[in-house]
Structures are given as structure tokens and as C-alpha cells.
Length: 405
Ligand SMILES: Cc1ncc(COP(=O)(O)O)c(C=O)c1O
Picture 1: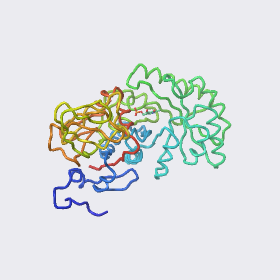
Picture 2 (picture 1 turned 120 degrees about the horizontal axis):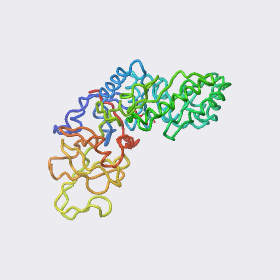
Picture 3 (picture 1 turned 135 degrees about the horizontal axis):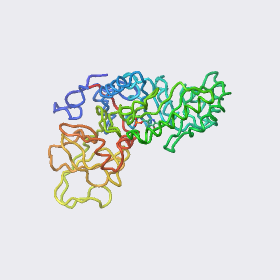
Picture 4 (picture 1 turned 120 degrees about the vertical axis):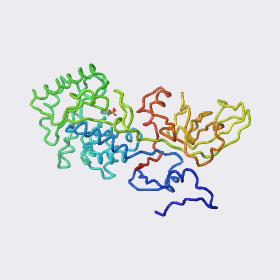
């Protein structure tokens, strides 16, 4: 790639965005190493991941967990961060397994050449079994029809289909009850192309010692029922980010973690290095006279002269419009309030307090800029939701870039 231009035509100062990024090396989701001009092409609005922080988070978790292996959960595009970037980085940091919610998500990893063991955590319809086995995925089962479809797929492809049995121990979400485990393993005993290698549950409140102990007791009962039916599972797992740290007995043979390695705060109150920054750019600055409408409808009208910056980001990118939206964004290291309703592709900001703000300035919606930081937790509180939903809500059209700082 040609070296990035440091000055704009006419010898003026480089635009701030180019200036800020041109010395940095970034990686796109498809694994290309890129530099600033590409970022500008890609990035009216984009997500930047601090891959060094992500890898360090994974290394720390792996070393604290040793000898128990780590399964990095990268479902829903790695909670909006970019599944390929996160999966590669997690594996580089020492994760042994990956997990997705669907066969389609796992197929995306396989198509990118990622061949690590991968568990599909969610519902797999029987008609997806053949593809799952062809991609050498491990499928969650709780239904004999799916087990039979996996057996059929294994026979057809001349291989063994791998599955983990999901047990519902107190969440009423997915899984069979512990007392149904003996019947399930008994019914699959004749399936010579199916290996029921794992058994697991999900914790509804991993940070809570009492609730989790009850769930672990039920899981233990499920192991006993399976053994009684002559089946011994090689991999037993339960813990997520919120549970493994303060409840060592929940670690068993594998720990599944998503939020913690991504630097999101966990329900038991810990937070590792932050990884994600959600960025946009100032597209235009307007000088608005008193009485000027801003955005759709009549929701906002200026009372005094105002400098209004238009940002090329909207609810089509994950900047929620309602019932409440972000309070403010960072430009030139300071907070500036959003004004008017967020549109699908654009939003407006009152920048009257800094007349120096100009087109091309970088905008931070989540993350640090200068002395200030807008945290995912802060936005979650404001939107009335949890941190996971805020980042998972960043939509598919937003490019994800990895940055080795
Ligand atoms: C079944 C299952 N296991 C593990 C996880 C990972 O949870 P966390 O990101 O809180 O570690 C999830 C995430 O929702 C999940 O659904």
C-alpha cells in the first residue's frame, strides 16, 4: 500500500482524522493490514479494537484459570466487537475453544480459516446438522430429534458428530432437566456416529453464591444420572465471566467467557482492560440562528445562536434513537450534547462551546478521547439496559478495525 499522505493538497495541515491515524497499523475483519487512507474510506463511523488489550485480557484469564481451558464466546459478532478479530486474538492469547450462538456464526469463522474447536451454544434446527458436522462444529443438544439429525449427518459424512448436552438447572431457557439426562443418554447410546462428549448448564446469576450453588448441585445431579445410565462426559462446564473468579468450584473442565475478555464489566464487579472505541467524524458544522429547527420534526429548536455539528452516525449504526439516546459525545477531548432526534444515518451535536471544531474531527461515542472517557456502563445506565446490549447494538454496516497499539 502507498504511504499515507501527511498533508492535504495545497500544503495545509493534514485533516485531524488522517493525522490521528496515519502512524497506526490497523487490521480489518478480513485480516488485511491497513493504514489511514483506507480507514477514511471505510470509516465515516467505525469501531476500533485495542487488540493488545484484548490479547492481554485473554492471557490474564488463561493464566488465572490454568489448568482449566478457556472458551472464548464470540456470538453475536463477539458482542458487536467483530467476531473474526476477536476470535483470532483470543486464540492468540491462549483460548482453547470458541463459542457462537448459531451454525451460521460458526461458519463465518470457518470460512475465515479458523479451525479451533467451536461450540454452538444456541438452538440448532435439525436441518442445520449436516452443515454443522461438515464444519466440524460441536453442537448443543437438548432434543432427541437434533441428536438423531447429527447421527444421520455423521453417518452420511463418514465421521463422528460431536455434541454437548445442555441441562437446565434454574434458568428455564435451554436444556433438559437433570432427571431427564439418564433417558436422553440411554436413547443416544445406539447412535454410533454421535459423540456426546460434553454436558453443561448456564448460570442465571453467576455473581450470586447461593443461586449458583443451587444450580451447580443440580448439574452434579445430572452427572450422577448420566453415570447411572453408563455415560461419562469428558467435558463438564458451567461458569461464565461472572462466576469463575469468585466460585472456583464452578470452573469444572472449561470456562466460557465473553464479556470479561472484551473488557466489559462483569456482574461480579470486575473490569479488565477496555477494548472497544466507537468512533465517528464531524461531517459538517452549521451556524444556526435562534429559532432554527434541528433534525426531523419539531423536537428541537435553538433558542440562541448555536454551532451544530452533523455526525454521519445514526440508529442505522447503533446510535439508539429512543426512547432515550446518548447524552453527549466527545470531540477534541470534551463532551458535547446531542440535539434533535437521531436519524437513521446522521445525528447532530451542539458544539457552541468549541468554535474550533471542524469537519474531519474525530468523534468518540464509546471510549476515551483525551482526558475523558464515555464508558459502556455509563451509556447502559442512560439507556436503561446492560453493557452487553449497548455494544451488541452496533450494527453490521459499521467497520471493525483492530489496532495494535
Ligand atoms: C450459554 C452461554 N455461555 C457463556 C456465555 C458468556 O457469558 P459472559 O459473556 O457473561 O462471560 C453466554 C453469554 O451470554 C452464554 O449464553
